[in-house]
Image (tube, rainbow, N blue to C red; front, side, top):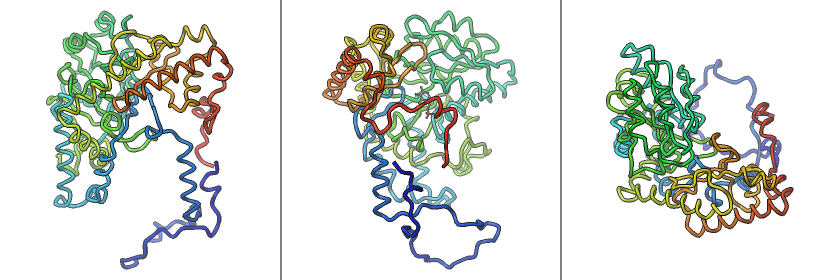
Length: 464
Ligand SMILES: *Cc1c(COP(=O)(O)O)cnc(C)c1O
């Protein structure tokens, strides 16, 4: 398909600016550009067709099943979008006088108190723009805490090998040495490895529970106790709260600090790199180190992002929590866990679960045996699923499972859909036995076949 600049024809431009209704003011010469900007010129029809064509090239939650494990691609209720589109929220300027922003402040306060209750934390910031940014902010709180006590010997952050890649990256960016510990046979933290890693140089532990293979660590209280005993703090990667919200709270599991991806669990569409929010909550003793927003009149400026973060994402999260309420929130996580277990059961005759026991909101399949038998890899199967109209699961993650496919069906899928999906997996598995070549070269029906992912990552062409 053509780029918008390639579609552009001189003279086709749209006049989209409304007539000037204020006095014309000359801008200082220093602020004026030397030549006109290169803007594409298209008529309204051409523009409309361009975006419709673009829309057909992509696949989103509104197209169909999207089991991208760890990413929580669930349906986002329209009412959340409607609230975030209210002119009182979209039209507000961050520098508007206090009297004009009372409603917005109320939204932030109420959302903070509800998320504190859900996470078991005492204080919250909405500044971080995404999960990784939230982790960075949270680990800086831990660092500040140790620094304020003059405890400069704590240079290490412990991260299990099943962690999301952002965890070790965060710890390293905060200047810590990352200590990787191997998971046990059961996919959970191996207590002996943890004990061996702990010491007077431990700043903290970063953990996701349930972890990225979808298992809830039954030793969690012992884990956080051991870290505290060694003088470290516990960071909870709550990017994905879908399995536990309304049932278990990171604060009660012994964690001191947590981030939650409002764009995963709390109903903001994501996946296209759009605005997110990695809300960070902490226990009261860390609260003094939270970012302080000038806009919210918090004394002692130290911000990790401008103003109050991605405010409209918070509006969606608040709407989501209020519409679900005290009964709906735990029901959503129950259904997420039920759906994952139902689908795992439907698929276990087709592919081998990496851990064949009760899972939480997601589970991992191990296609090593299937690959030995057919030569068809997890990548081939994932690409083949595209031709059957569903989005591939997460592939080759977590690293502790080879030929991994990780599925998170989420709570917004019906039983009928899950049955259909199991049927599609069965067809693809059979296809791999009968015609492996078809899967080696799949997808055949998507606008793009197999891009060279390595070249795209190493030498991206970002502008024409
Ligand atoms: C998605 C995710 C992250 C990162 O969140 P971003 O918003 O993509 O930065 C971190 N940890 C886990 C477990 C995740 O699933």
